[in-house]
Image 1: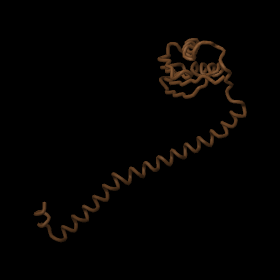
Image 2: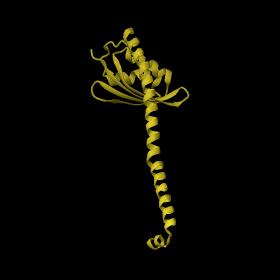
Image 3: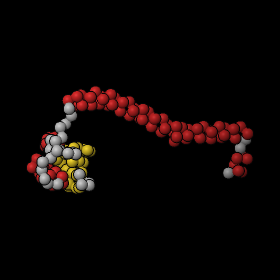
Amino acid sequence: MKAWWNGLSARDRGVVQIGASLALLMLVWALLWQPLSRARHAVRAQAVAQAEALAWMRPAAQQLAAAGGLAQAPSTDARSLLARIDAGAREAGLGGSLVSVEPQGSHRVRTTLSAADFNTLVRWLQQVAGQGVALEQLSVQRASAGRVDARVLLTEAAP
């Protein structure tokens, strides 16, 4: 390599140095600057979308609070939360979609449903909320038309 370099004329060496410098700058731009710039633009767009969602949620939360929210009366059922949730889901017509009902402590239950009818799931959650059970987490993914896969974390409301 050194022999090749020494064999070049001064003008050719200058051209090779300028070309190598340009190639290095292009690599830095392509491998560092451009991905960082794209990521920055994506984060800004995401921040704008989240700010819009927050702007919508604040008045909606005030309206819900003004309406009294969801009533959560303590349950009069003597069964455990696990038994009530399992039986309630089956009675609501979700038995075929029920994958698991797992305790997450003494007052919390995680329920997993697969290919459940969305409308039936929503009605069941509304029914459960009226029985002294609070919806703590809900994760829903579309499985097919009108069907969803869901993970629900329910907590027994304090008396």
